[in-house]
Length: 296
Image (cartoon, rainbow, N blue to C red; front, side, top):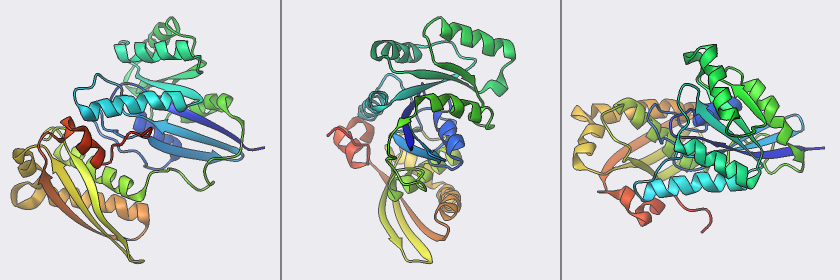
């Protein structure tokens, strides 16, 4: 008999939720950056093994929203918990409990939804810190399990999956066996390009960038992609393009390498940079750039 479970991965920004999802799947479906609030949409990762199918909902980092994009991100995370059979709350082992974790725990208590606490980044802390963190969270809520992990180093991921198996119920699968994400190809491409912007420019550019795929043509032996990168200020455009176009060329090179691995064929990538002032403040523009409320 086939079994399935929908599990939401939640937590504050930059605790390693997307890194964890990628580690579980063994594939890169969620972008990873050292910058907080990297994930904006809910990303579905599908892990199928034997007669079991796990559908993981990777969510934006939960935070206090400051604009329309932030409001969308927080609502997306909240909705994911309501849609799930269980929740994996990911925390940075060495950080104190914040209002974000308190709010998640409050929801878990009210809803009665089962949950696991994943203590991430354990490679950066000693055993005493890990034990102390478990003790603090155990006094707040009766989690089904406490699993210390290092998503970046792929440590104890099997142990986490073993704990997640308790949430499986007998059911037909919702996705084909060979499917690992329900993201459209254009969204995956846009997110890969945005990741390369964040990594290449590091601290020079804020999060006010969005990528829109204007053209995606599969010509069998070559995929042609035209992407527009939107930023909020003319000065940001100069940083993204770089002196003599050097930064943009580097972003394109890194993105193309990942895309060719993903699609298994040559990719021609054409990048353009445009200014759309304060786009994160406009609910309409946020929606137009692909961050849409799934309930509407």
